[in-house]
Image (spheres, each protein chain N blue to C red):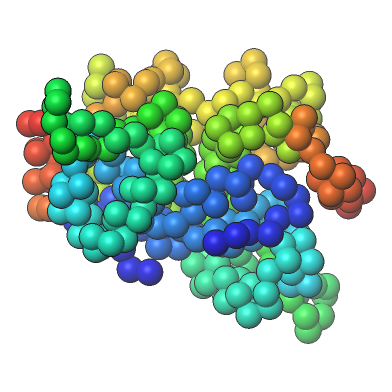
Length: 161
Length: 161
């Protein structure tokens, strides 16, 4: 899927890679510790060809890396890279929204802090100094990669609001 | 897309609704203040039939609501509901990951705090008392909606790690 995005923002760029159901479930499985092709297949009930395709894509984009199963082994498994592990807030955001709006009072899983066993706090948007921010506190500014189209759109947004 | 998910977690349930590129870009547009069909179409360059389909789906799931453009008007526009506005952390997570890993040093947009003009802080996973948590601090516990399959899988996870 090639998303035409005149705003040129990172949402579209990210969705190019992970904006598809199975891909994020594969990443979730990797966070749960799944590494082998057969285990991904077993836990997700996904067709071999789709799984193979998505694992290749995730490896090509550096979210997973292939590693030999043991020293000198010919077979490989798949492990999250740093780039992949940094998808954790995205997975937490997906989970918390679903727990609240799709499965209220019946969340299947709870993410807890190992230390005190308590559920983690809902993600919040925070200012640089830690103050919690609401939608109305936020504004968009052009970043270092802003194109002319980005700037034009931002100007229109400011004029409208 | 029907995702078979033996773990029965909210990630899969959420992806059923929003796990598709255009859908999240439409939601991003709604956050930017876009309300009218023609404006969504213009800003996203999306085909009418796809846009129409996705707006219907988002309205059916209560993420957008249709509202008359003015008092007594026959035409409608689309506005985020509370359920929709609560997708903000998910959009921020997508943006921050993309800014770091796809557009490093060339983020097209920066989300800032209106009050001080500074970029917002990267999302962090926090314990109930606010302590920042890493992946290794997290564990999963069965929630009120855990099925037998959920419990069995969680037990396997604990035995493995």
